[in-house]
Image 1: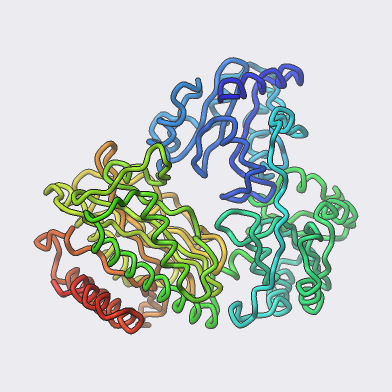
Image 2: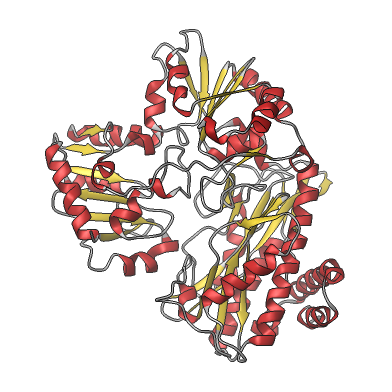
Length: 592
């Protein structure tokens, strides 16, 4: 079936169930950003392959809502499907709930699968649509009825993440969680987000591509803890370690039974943004629900000393792989055929030579020329370009190491570029440096400082339609909350020990894209009579291409930052390189 045929079959099921619309999100039962193939229903139905988006199908029309990262990609992939693109965040564009409210008559019926919708979103839909007496039917997964060869749930084994890397045992982490539970006056905590569970119990898996997590739920009481998982995934060794740390392993679906048995005097903490609607409704009505961010989300965001030491080692390994790759590219460009796919494969080859490397942390974005204007472009055999000795190549990539997760973007100058491209490359660098060298009063949030990276770009009337930075997991998801840098307001303070990316960019549709990204560690700076100050320490070690810079556009302070950064890169990486690679790196990190 093509997209139109799939949508037609869905409409037939909707008619059978007397539904006027059906809504398909991008998530799985754990509200994950990246999901296993079984839950890629929105992708299967619409043909749009981006990681974020919501598809709405009515009896006679369809729409897809996605954010600025995917506008160009979605426009292309939705051609001929009959699905209209709604560009989220743009003036005059309603969100899909408001659109449904405007489009559907009173007493309409909207279907969703409550297992893949967060309880908070379902509640929002019910509240907003109740004004027109529109009913939400959340019991049915209609996609399952029409997806004949739908993949099964993943069944890969889990493994222990050794305390030598984790820094704390699961028992010690549970103790910290219970301390916070006591402060909140709850005796149970339901945790559904996969990275939180993996961090808490010091386990890792491979149920989701690039994210070392396993499909599971966790329930923590003031005296006991449970892991609900497909028990065939859990070896005797892993089970023994969990039990030694006070964790009981139960079947995945039994979480519903446990929630249904809570008593009237029990209080359970849960995150309604990370708990699916079916689970939320399974909690007995007598039990008191306390809604807040998962305790583990904030705990794991602040890396401990062992994690920080290990993640710096992981970034050194990753920097070595990057430099070896860039040296190889410099030596071979123009001498052999190199495509965007070759770039991704060769970079992974160099990473696999590094100690404790497990795999990529996301699908490598290797985007040449105008492909780089699509922020999350993925090369295929049909679309990939062959590289030439001109223009710019954007590479956004990362690795999963036992001691950390890396995420780095470099824009590489392959040959001649225009004056405007050089200006834009330099403006992106100025924004990056402006944020990287900031001194901040403790208490600031990512939305407070996001503007620092945008100002040089705004000054020429350009903006990028995405955030400036995101948290990064520790051998976990490459996108991790609760901290982030974005124009969207948030209240999460930047804390010592947090990791966050710094990745401003410029994207000119049909022409080129530029991004420079480092991971940064939040560290103490100084204390004055006005308060405590914090700053960022870069933990990504890789040269920024000097051939793209118009030095006349950089201030003296910006040149000092860049020279200091490059001197650090050379000092840290050079001991791990061959002589010819060291000579190449010395030139790439020369002072300007």
